Structures are given as C-alpha cells and as structure tokens.
Length: 395
Image: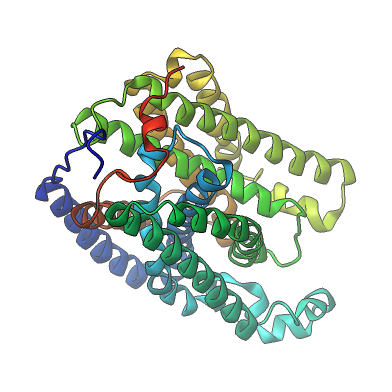
C-alpha cells in the first residue's frame, strides 16, 4: 500500500453480520409460512423482492463500470461499496429458483388453454414460452456474473500489485459491459415485469426499470458510505463534500425516473389504445388508486424537494433519510408494477403481512454479503491510480 494513502482497515463488528443472519432466518421462516397460507400471493410478493435484489446488484455493477468508463475520480474512494453489493449477483441464480415453480401463478401466457384461445398470445409464443424464458434468465445472470468476476478480480488484484494495467483492463471491460447491460437489464424487465400482462407493451419500459434501479442502487451506496464514514471505516480525508456527487446523482435519477414515467403515461394516454390503456386503468381502480397517487409523491415530489438544494447533497443526516426513503420508494414502485396482476378479478386486501416478509430476505442478503466481503477485502481500492485525486476532491 502506498505510504501517502493513510488508510487503515477496520473490522466491521460481528454483531452487524449477526443481525443479517437473524433477519435472513426470520424472512425465510415467514416466507415459508406465506407460501403455505397463500402460495399465489406469495409468488407475487417474492417476485418484488427478487427484482429488488436484481436491480440493486446489477445496478451496482453498472456504477462500477460507469466509473471506469467515465474516468471519474470522486467515486474511487467509494467504489468498493458497489463492488460488494454486486456480490449479490451470484445469488440471483439461487433466488430465481422458487419463481420457476410459480410460472403458472405469475404468468398468464403459461396457460396452454388460454393461449390456444388468444390469437395475440399465439403470435407471441416464439418469445413467450417457458423454455426460452428460462434460457434468457440463465443467460442474463450468467453474463452479469462473468463481468462481476472480471471487474472485481482486477480491482482486488490491484490492491496487491498496484499494476495500473488492471485499471485499463477494467476500462475496456466497461466499454463492452455498458451495451450488454442495456440489453440484459431490458430483457429482465420485460420478462419478469412486463409479461405479467402479456397483452400490454411499452417501448420504454426497460429505461423505466433502469431509472428506478439506479435510484435504489445510488441510495444503497449513499446510505452505506455515510454510515461507514460516521463509524470511521473510510479514509479520514473523506469529508461531507465527497457525498455531493452521490446526492446529485440521486437527485438526477429522481428527475429522470419522473420524466420517463410521465412520458410512458402520456404516450399511452394520448394514443388511447385499449390494448395499452387497460394497464393504467388497473392501477386506477379501488385502493390501487391511492398507491398510484402516493407513488408520485413518494418517488418524485418528496425526494425532489429533499435533495434539490446544494446543502442537502452534503448533509449526511439528510442523505441517510433520503436514501432510506428512496429504497422504500423503489420497493413501492415494484409493488405498483407487479401486484395489480394478482389483484385482477380478486377481492383481497391490498396490503397484508406477506408484503413485509420477503423484503427482510433482501435486506439480510445485502448486509451479510457486504460484511463477508468487507472482512476479506479493503473497503477502499488502496492502489487505484486515481484514489489520491478522489481523496483530494473538493467542491
């Protein structure tokens, strides 16, 4: 480690990992009960958690690639945080297994008798069939895992060797990964979310999911960075000013999400085609209407005013509050996307205890993965050639 980088690794208390395992055990037990009580609803609520983990894990890998490709300096001291969160990618292969048993509960297009009576679904059969669906899922998770291994291997090896060529390798990987990410994240969004209503379509749905994923990813990174700084786990030269760009990015994606969400709604409303308007009408019926209205304030209005000022982007307390708020907003957005399909034609409560069980698994998974990685590796890329510039960052 270079002498001019005054960083001393501190062990994260074992109590943090213990909390993660307790939450995981509680989530698994309550989740099992949920499947026994109402397996159909449990599959839908579990899908929310799966997509939440997917969005943050893959979004974190995108943040890592974006830093390398953009040549950013300010984010280098924080890069290990998204690297650790991307460590959830290998677990997606395990988390997706329960959903494979819920195809017929989740997806209308898996019912042979319904497809035979529907010409539209018959026309979509070459894409919407279970075998090809599974192949696409395995392909996407496999691609993400390969890039995750390559990025993190080079980054961690640089801690030992200080070889700057490893940075160049990751820049090249980033240039390849960014378009691959765009395609695979769109496939995941279309497959697991949009095909819940196979008659509905939106040409910007992939971008909509991407924007929400970035908000959640940045919120998770910001919350973790602030907590680590407060507890003295990061470099002593990191000040509140270093958090500005994280706050600014969260603010930018809050606006971007609102822009894409409004554009999607406006285009469908203006065209007024029955095959697309029904999707929004589902979300404007009964109690879902209040969630639809609430989403505007929770996901846009409140975080907009909470992050609009410069001081708010450098205030650790404000950033922690807004990070937790935006993580909740992303979960609410996924609920809004997924659950109306389950509610269709049913008279059931919109909110039940089941909706709070599986999120415990997501929280626990990220805590455990982060702590395990923090034990093995430095919390900062100590021999990255841009680390000094990152530490010297000032507004």
